[in-house]
Each structure stands twice: as structure tokens, then as C-alpha cells.
Amino acid sequence: MIAPALGAASAALARPLEGRRAIVVEDAPELAGELDQLLKGQGMEVLTVHSAEQVNGRFVSFDPQACIVDLDLRGGRGGEMLDLIGRLFPKAGAILLADETAGDHVTTALAGRVSTTEPVGKPIHPSRLLSAVGRCVAAYDTAREAARAVREVARLTGQLAEANRAGSAVLGNLSHELRTPLNAIIGFSEMLGQDRPFTPEKLRDYAASIHQSGLHMLEVIETVLTLAALESGQHPITPESIDLFAVLATEVAALQPLAKAAGVELSRRIAPALPRLMADAALLTKVLHALGENAIEFARRRGKRVAVVARSSDLGGVLLQVADNGTGIDEAALERIDQPFTVGEDVFSRHHSGLGLGLAITRKVMDLHDGELKIRSRPGVGTVVTLLFPEARSVR
Image 1: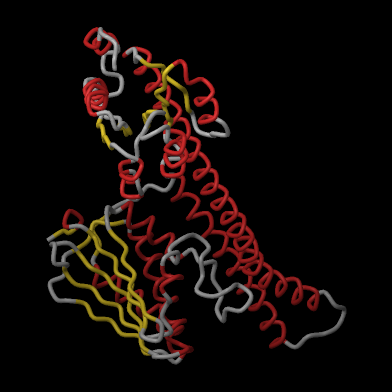
Image 2: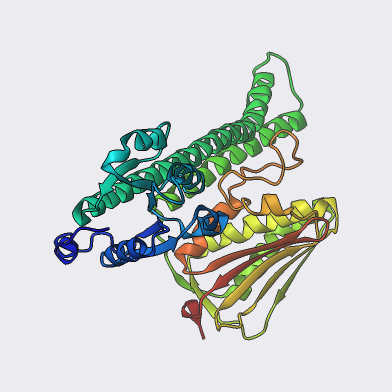
């Protein structure tokens, strides 16, 4: 039985157990009812069972913070019940109700238990029982936080390992992009430094190769610096009213020599009465050029067609698309393709140059314009990159 002063004990604790859960295993109906009343008086959710057979895996979802078990359950099976409780609810604390004369049985029942367990003597004093329940709840919270911390450490460890792999890939990629033109510059300049005559044609070829390699290195460095500025917020946009027809026509014309060399048909489809766009012209041109180069490269291997599309979006804004029917991107690669320094193939085996920054820069540019970047692709079918500018950027 529970000793008097139930109401006083409940009021004194000011319901610190509100919203917590307890399982009571008690086969004496009167005591089970009193325990239920006491715990619910503290705002707890209570599940009462009257035998060990009633406690099974169905109650795992109840996830109690405290389990109260009577040692005298059906002929002293309380110890057995504690073992079952420990297996079903490893984070929950347990309270063993026992007469003070049953000291040896209590010691046996508590032996070897890992989770928080303590005995409460009969007759049961409300404040002592509730204090024990409070300690069980605190132990449960500690165990849960410890488990959460372990999961977080595992997650961060995985992120660190991924970052290390990504860092190695970045260095390999950057090294590849800088070493190739640098080797050309060194090689041709060494040849020019030799004390032997060169024909004018050879001199022009060597000079052109050095110049082209220098431009490539400058482009690589400027691309990295652009992304760094965008990432740090140090690259504010300078919006102006842009004639999209003129910009797209100019950009497609600039990409035509690359498309022709790759054997790719490059076309443009620009809707009539297309609104002007308030955007940063320099960044938009950079983005369109990068997307066009990527599309041409992947269409070069199959498909042989790339289209640049511009029209009003269904939401009143402007939609720009660069579509190809090339090799496409598999689902795993598509999930990370717009992350910095991500390329469609391994740096040592891919057939094209590039740092893998085009889509990362595009994502940042679209964020600055309150727009959206969408990428749809299927291996062997092709890729469509869509830039969606909001209605607020349209000038009609």
C-alpha cells in the first residue's frame, strides 16, 4: 500500500514528470490503482500490466523512462521481470518494490543489472517513490543523450572521412588542371630558349601554345576565385535589365566553334515576346557558357545535339534551359553533381578538362537571384539543366 500524504507529495514536486512514461508491473489491483493515480498525478502516461506474460515486445514502442516492478509478483517473479524489462527497455530505469524484510531477495534481483535500478520499500512513501522515478527519468535522458552523442560522433566521423576524400579529389583535380598547361608553357619556352634557329611558323605555333596555356591557367584561377567570392558572400550581384534574346544569341554564337569541332549541332529556341531579365549580365554569361561547354562535351560522345531554350515560366518568371541528348548522369552522381569540384568522371579517366565548378557556381548565382537550379538527367538519354528566375526578376 501507499502511505498517506499523496496529495502533498504530488503538489510539492510541481509535476516535474509531465509528459513522461512509466510501466507498472503489479498484480495487486488496489496497489496498481494507487500507483497509477500517483504517477498520473504528476502528469505521467502510465501503462499498467498485471503479469510477466503481459509484458512483451508490443510495449517497446511505449518507450518508458521508468519501470516499476513488484518483487512479490506472482510468487516472487519480480527479479525475472526485471531481466525482461532490462532487455525490452535498456535505457529505462527500474524500481523494485519490496518489503524491508526481503533484503536477500532484493540483492539477488538487483545483481548484475546495468541500467539504473533501485529498491523502494513497502509501505511505499509517495515522495520516495517519485524521487526514484525522477532519478530513473534522469538516467534515461542521460542514456539517450549519450546514444545521440555516439550517433553524432559517427556522423561527424563519416563527414570528416568524406571531406578528406573530397579534399584529395580537389587537389588532384586542381593539380591536373594547372599542371597540363604549365607543362606546355615550360616545354615550349625551353624549346624557344635553345640556341638554334626556328622557322617563323614554328615560332608562331610555340607562342600560340604558350598563350593558350596561359589563358587556360588564368581561367582556372579566376573560376576558383569566383566560387570563393560567391561562397563568402563577397561577390554581390549588379542587376541590370538584360535583353535575353541578344545575350543568348551572342553566347550561342560564341559556343558554335566548340560545338562544330565536337561535331555537335547547337541550336537555340527563344520564345517571342520574352521579357527582359533583371540580372547580373557578367555572371549570367559565365553560367550560360559553362553550361553550354558541359552540354557540348557530353553530347560529343553520343547524341550530338544541344539546345539552349528560353521562355516565360508557368509562374510568370523566366525559364532558361540547356539540354543535351548525351551520355547523361547516373542517380548517385546526380545527387552531388552541383557540389564544388565534382565532375562526371574521375579526374584521371575523364575525357574532358574542367574543375567541376560550373554547376556549383550556377547554384550560387541562382541563389543570389532568388532563383532555382534544377537538373534532370538519365544515363544514355541526356541532361537538362533549368534556371528558373522568379517573376520579380522579369521586366515586361
